[in-house]
Image 1 (cartoon, each protein chain N blue to C red):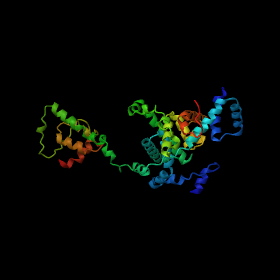
Image 2 (image 1 turned 180 degrees about the vertical axis):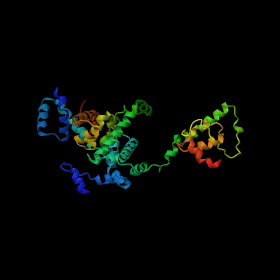
Image 3 (image 1 turned 90 degrees about the vertical axis):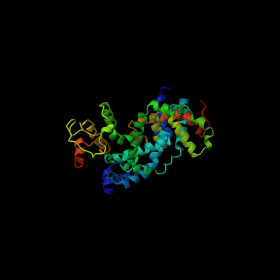
Image 4 (image 1 turned 30 degrees about the vertical axis):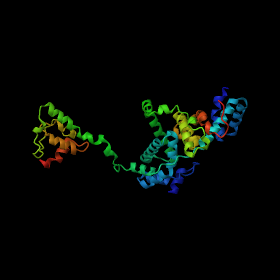
Amino acid sequence: MSDCQDVAALMVQEADGTIEAAAQGRLMAHLRECSACREELEAQRAVREVLRSRPAAPVPAGFEHRVARRLRPGSSWLPIADWRRWTLALSPLPVLLLVLRLGGVSVEDSSASTPIRWQAWEEATGPDAPVSSIVWQPGMTEESIFVAALTARPRETLQDFFEKHANER
Amino acid sequence: MPAAALDLAGGHAWVMDPDLALVRAAAGGDEAAFAELVRRHQRRVFNLARALTGSEDEAEDLAQETFIRAFRGLPRFRGDSAFATWLYRIAVNVFRSRRSRKSLWPRLWSGEADRRHVRPADASPAADQESDLMRRDLIDKALAEVPPDLRLAVTLRDIEGLEYREIAEVTGVPIGTVMSRIFRGRQRLRASLAVLMNRPRLSH
């Protein structure tokens, strides 16, 4: 019975019809004495037969087009639906409102009718800081922060942003 | 081009890979060439994905991901094996990484754990008269009950018809292990596929 483990690979090859003559001789010698393995070989053949009869699954219509579409970045509108991409840029807004409230400043105080005035920035954060750190710049109006939140590109630095809007002063 | 390919083959006994020209064009960024490769191989890749996952949606996902990764990996394809074999290897890697990401909780959540107790045999007592679709479904459900490594080996062998040597290459295990997994995979399938067998059912 200890041979049963050893002939497993031979039974696979026998069922598949890939066994070599010498190995087949060894297997047959074992099978003559082991009814369990004889039955197991039949089962291996039967399972193999069923699996080989499995009808192939048809490829769903449009599969190759869906693959092609995924290969072209930017051609899909789905990234826009990913809220994480664009809500991140809005994140300074609630922070600002909170800061203003905590500071006792009334939101209505801000001069909504005056054009945006870009104050000379004071190096509270440094030129390489992300645009979102505009929140920490002293003297920023909430309107300029709002504009920053809406128009800033990912990874834009504070300095880039100020230069871009320099002519609006 | 044929001369170069023959040089590459030099001395080896294998036939030239019919995909080689397309693979080179696609590696150079030719999307039409890659589209042709997808057309050539989608049947096999999708069929494998369907057998491994047992679900139409997961199969679509797995097959798509396989081709996307293949496209990105084309510059690294050196032609040591046939393109088809290389694709299988990618599909197997995608399949494995998905299995390991899938923890028990999401499976419990989706009810997959409950479905595991449904024996395919109960679902269809008159299976020999069922359509292709039912037959395939029954087989795939039975396969889903088999541990992933055994399922892979037996699927690549009996459904995809790969040689032991190719399965070893695709799954990264020795040939002896491949055979042992095929053996154990078939053993596991014996009871659940009995209903589809042409011979009298084996008594338990």
